[in-house]
Image 1 (cartoon, one colour):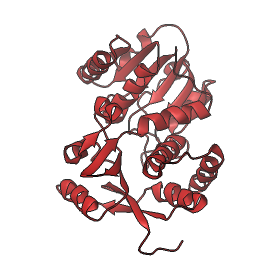
Image 2 (cartoon, one colour):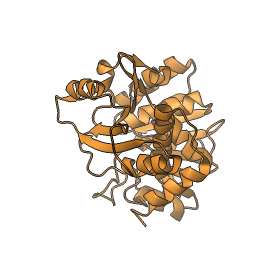
Image 3 (tube, one colour):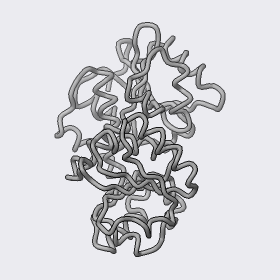
Length: 287
């Protein structure tokens, strides 16, 4: 890659950012598609987010991804925000426009593409969603907006699950999200579910942690999707498989959210062939 005065810069802002695989996605795509662009991570200290966005605009950065802990806080620094991101309440992609950045959320469409690529459907499904934090709230909105029949939102505290369910149900206009405590899984209807693990439980280095350990819970699951991708196989995934279900990690979600951001920045459509080449490069970090 030749970097000169015509090179456009994109990057990632967050804290921490040292572990990120996003440069693999974007720099590989830029090389394959012949775009004069480079992607780098930027560590933004607490209290400096607004300065970072303003500085990026002044430096004419083409776009930015936003990761934890700034996906909601960054909204205050934007010129405009996409409807989906506004409904979810989180932004992970900034696109340079005249007068500032416009915010998008590519995480949820990235998850949808990832699930679709594995043959997993949301439409008409009964879904178990573990967690009621920021990521799980976005997943709840995705499932409801894509036509899930019911989403049983299991969380440690019922009050938080009720808050998320109320917000999403009002936005969608139908009562699709059902708030429950973790222990309420014994009250679920007697059928098999798609289960989405939307918490940080099981993330490295605490790889043996799991939200629910009871084997009886996993016997209710035909397919498990964990948003975590490090470790490659979480204990949640192992338990799903041990009880006869299929299980997937979140690496393809990371892939496709990045691809959608790249498409927004460069006004292109990335082929599935190029997507899979990037995915194999990402996988090499784990296998």
